[in-house]
Length: 111
Picture 1 (tube, rainbow, N blue to C red):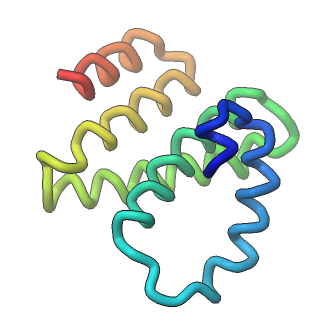
Picture 2 (cartoon, rainbow, N blue to C red):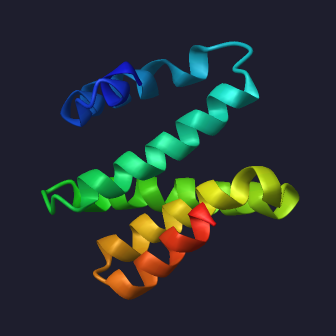
């Protein structure tokens, strides 16, 4: 995820694909790392889906799966996960073209 921190989201695609190849081989993944992976996967999934390329469905599915996971975690610990869940929902609605709902979810995520 260093590419994201550098602002180079295009390089993230390659890093994401490489990470999928080795994800199941990692032992002892810490939950904090998993939280960040799910959250960033969702944000970047929706970002790449908005580019409307031939792989739009793939990236939308990644975003939606991350959004569902974060929503499930928010049910168990609202104070820790609801802001991230709401931000993923905002990105989802923005992808679908509903800027009003997206804006409301965004505002809710930062309040």
